[in-house]
Image 1 (cartoon, rainbow, N blue to C red):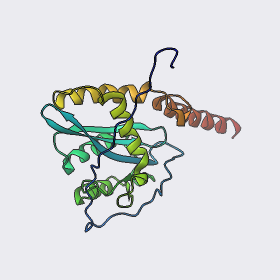
Image 2 (tube, rainbow, N blue to C red):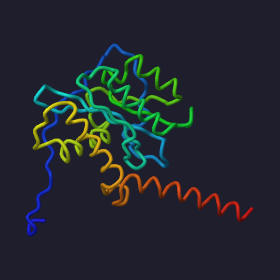
Image 3 (spheres, one colour):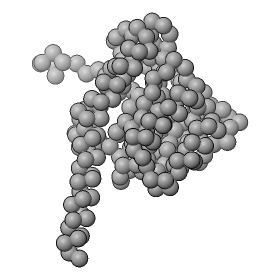
Image 4 (tube, rainbow, N blue to C red):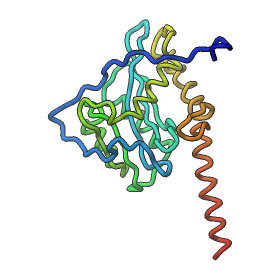
Length: 214
């Protein structure tokens, strides 16, 4: 890289965005830092970050399917209220249509948005099992924070953003690139969409093979 005049993107300092409600009843931690899944729609992780614009801060929420790191839902908002993360969740549910009570776990930190009554009720309504990490421990939602870090480093840093609309358009293009073209080492240096396509292809081939032997 040095001989070609290339430099890697460096991530900036992290700033705490999670505001915990210590009085709120929280689901158990059903992930225990094991951010892996044997299939799509087995484990989702969720988190949000912030972007500074000329008109103030905007907030960006992501919902990620852990199997291939595929971003299944996202939302850009001028406020960090519960509606904002709920919109990202609704997009994920609409995108994936997970089977009710099909073993899908949704994991987040203890931010007030994610442990709110409305958010937890929506998960229950969709048949998704809620999981929440411990207080003040970024490792308990490390995969979601990794995606936030990649987003900030690859798309947001070293650029001035005019307003929410500009960030929204940039996020749209980045998510499409990330899902369909970005090579990810943990899944074999292929894009998330390709990893999921291979999984379903193998399922089909296994089913066909089983049919031939019966």
